[in-house]
Amino acid sequence: MSRIQACLAALAVQNKKGLIPFITAGDPDPELTLPLMHALVEGGADIIELGVPFSDPMADGPVIQRASERALLKGVSLRNVLEMVKQFRSTNQTTPVVLMGYANPIERMGQEQFIHAASEAGVDGVLVVDYPPEECEYFAENMHKNGMDTIFLLAPTSTDERIAQVGKIATGYVYYVSLKGVTGSGALDLDAVADMIPRIKKHVSVPVGVGFGIRDGVTAKAIASISDAVVIGSRIIQELENTPREQAVAAVQSFITGIRSALDN
Image (cartoon, rainbow, N blue to C red; front, side, top):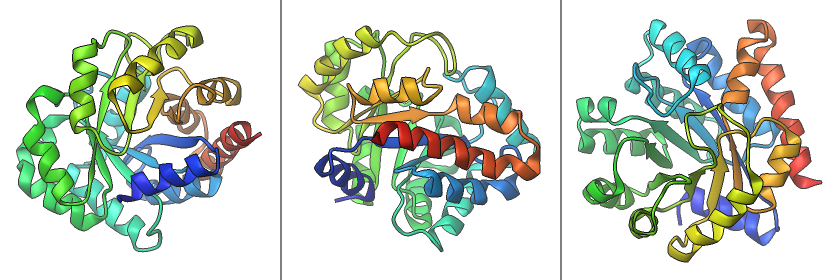
């Protein structure tokens, strides 16, 4: 059982919901990424999604696009991100880390080399936005052989056929995008999410996390009532944008602590 699977299974036994925050590696500064990861854990994160900066993050809205741009200007590459995970693992052996990003950096490195390097660094799962599930069974198989999970996105427009294909190769959890559009956009329609989750669970045996549009404890708690985990990204990046550098880590930890409290109470 992978770290992700063990984490979510333990939460289910406790009747608790997973909290999965996202930050972009290297934003606002590479030196802050490791302290931010530890702050997320201290605040109550169960799994960390660590964004790999990319020049054309097509699924991401302006907030996360800006985070990628800032990190790229600092020279942060996929290899740098893997080194950050390795450093995190030197003091934290339990919190799962999922890399979230796009195919191009992985393809440039080479899939097999990437999988080996990610496993060595202590990565637990990978979500590649533009790897279609119909075309990456070989990648998923190699990931699983190396003890890592493959996470896939599902959306309001996903057909039953696409959901079933994801169900065949997804491990760890699936990430349901609750809105049509990019990250950080729109307003949540809880009824629509509630209708979609049972459709997903007909075909998918792993837990379902829901993200896009979760901005505070109220929306997080509402989403948690109909899913297995909540994913929060753009709102955390905004916290970093609106806070002086020396206060950024404390501000993010405080925000996540508030979300954790809302989920548990």
